[in-house]
Image (cartoon, rainbow, N blue to C red; front, top):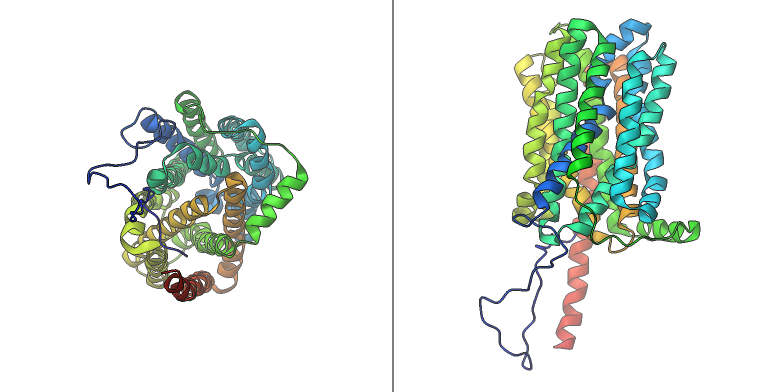
Length: 436
């Protein structure tokens, strides 16, 4: 991957170029948002709230899986479908809904998606069987599909390039807060009143976030409606899939999320069992560790500025691998520290990869982001299901082995990208010398 741009304009001075004062800088784009300018804070707060609602709803059953299993007499693998079905539906629907956002607008699509998902979330606690619960979660995941890719495209269109990584980092930080608060709330409410009441509480939390989003999100100023031409859509998608850099970013997002989905789907089963035997409320509180993800995703812009995109990815994947290995110990403090490292590495890697997609795609940004989200949530779905099956078959060590395989995939892809970039630079040097 090429090094991250700072987003600033570059001026090349030649013999015929008039000299400029040292302090001269390009005039800011009045239609683009950046820190310190009107609307940026409202936009950040609105998308932060949307990120909270998205992860709180999408993973609402994850911390409750042991209770769901006990209620319906289901295995870990069967109960894990209440998570995997939602993320899988999101992965399948994100591309068509992103196409609708090209026609009707990012803001409108995000509002509609959040509204439907919240309404379904208020019905989920009344599911009479595991089958009905999974079916409602499918609908909820499909509804949420309109939000992530539209949010990425909205940011790419409305925020100045130099502030894009930081803005996306804040949205991802909202994801981590939503994942954390939803699970903690669910854990303690479930311990007091049962898992159905816990899902109801998450629905109310998401409703509050949706109201904040509706009143805070600024109107789009740089959106140009497109058509719903299927051929044009297929051409745009084909163009993105033919881009080697985008393909690598999609694979990296999927593999990172495979690790994260496997770990956090199974961790509840491990902690409620021997040798830890923790109560449901304490297990839910373990997700306070998501605060680490909030910090690491928000710091992604600084990591890229210092290390470059590939350097930031190497750091993220190394941190994740160290956390997986540390979590193998049957000591609670070691497991918690392992979860800290896994969470920090995952959220940093996700923020870097997703922002790189938005910067790489110059046209059809919603489709480019949608393809990333599809890969990302397919990774979540696969990780949740495979992680649960691995745990049922070989215990926590098997789940960690699955995660390490995914980590190895990220390393391999990033190394390949490094070699490609070096080869391209070597080829560019003779051409530049000949021109001079």
